[in-house]
Length: 517
Ligand SMILES: Cc1cc2nc3c(=O)[nH]c(=O)nc-3n(C[C@H](O)[C@H](O)[C@H](O)COP(=O)(O)OP(=O)(O)OC[C@H]3O[C@@H](n4cnc5c(N)ncnc54)[C@H](O)[C@@H]3O)c2cc1C
Image (cartoon, rainbow, N blue to C red; front, side, top):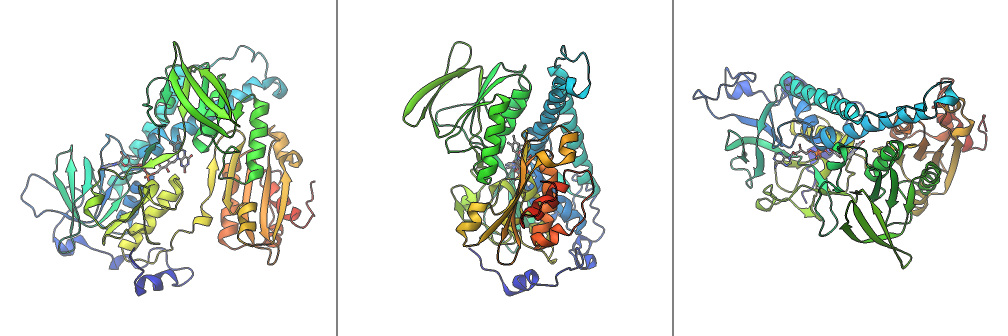
């Protein structure tokens, strides 16, 4: 693994608040290399010299497209290579965006079903138009895919269709990326960013089809299934469980570990399992799936819990057991890039061990597979390429957001992790039952838990389960970034009546002095 050269260390420890992108005038200027070169309208039919990009980005998911946009903003000549007919990757087409569109439908439907309490009448006969729901979801995706095309044009990024592969080390400082499936055979660039993303892991021997589903098939079913078994209770599993339960399916979760959302604080898992039970979502933990087989009309899953074998049948099975990095068949073996269980090892500036090649997004080892993490990794990589000051990613400042009902938002250390690291821990916890806005929106489940270091009061982690947790967590990320103490947070005025007041109460609860509970 490459060690950081001294000038990079200097960049890391540079002024606390540098001008955002330094001196843009000093960034790479292609006109100096090719006088008269026009980024907008390169005419491939004429005999101009081959373009040498400052950066070629392979893969247009959130990690890749964010890197491309920032490259353009920094004055770098950038190209983005995409094998699919559209930009946006997993996140936009079969991940973050379509799932959240369906979750919004599910939430509205739940409100209407419980409408009597809100004074809505004649709601008994309300039904779902699945076609309209699917159309709306697709409309949102298409709109944002078009938006990305616009952003590429706006930032003078060349979009190149095709499958990209690394070809080895740079020659005279220039890398060649081989292309397949498009008009060009290769492109040249001084730097390459690999952002090829991930694919759903499958259980051994299974192939996705119309009954055994991954995140791709489950998003465009012809109709709402009557029953579905979800294998895996990470973010993807619990979100789809929530969606299809709200839409009326019988849902069962099978989780191999002792609790749902195992990366979250234990109390959050406990609360989610409690609320899911209350919502009628069946679930088994410590469940080892042994066999998945097709039956006449559906799929049967055989699994063992505490040595006892059981079998369940449903119309569909969703396999949500994690995501594998897409690092096969991209030419990594021709480089010095180091790989660990398929994930690419990088340094704090997202550099791989091959000079001039960076990696960002879901393929990166030891960072979470999240769109916002990938996007920031893309910014770090490209800013480093441009030679501007840049702050490496701090893993403990990356928020988790799970959009199930109730939502989960978290950042920093869990209580158990803080104790494992030797902190004397002081916790403040505040339930949404005591928050007036939670009463107004009719969502009382959950709490905010703040984990602090008893010695200095610094907030080490915040764990929220409840209404709008995925929005509320933003304040906590800022608090952690600013190394805020619970006392400082307890002096910050929060508007009333808001869900965010629960943050204020939770910070007061660290000292046993919550106002509202
Ligand atoms: C159901 C689901 C819901 C999710 N919800 C969220 C969420 O709410 N919030 C969140 O933060 N994250 C969420 N994620 C995770 C998020 O989607 C990923 O972290 C994110 O998409 C990773 O971005 P990426 O740019 O690394 O890769 P991807 O988005 O996977 O994009 C990679 C791109 O590279 C292209 N590509 C691959 N190989 C090549 C090649 N050789 N040549 C050319 N192009 C290539 C692919 O076609 C693709 O377009 C969700 C994931 C799933 C599956």
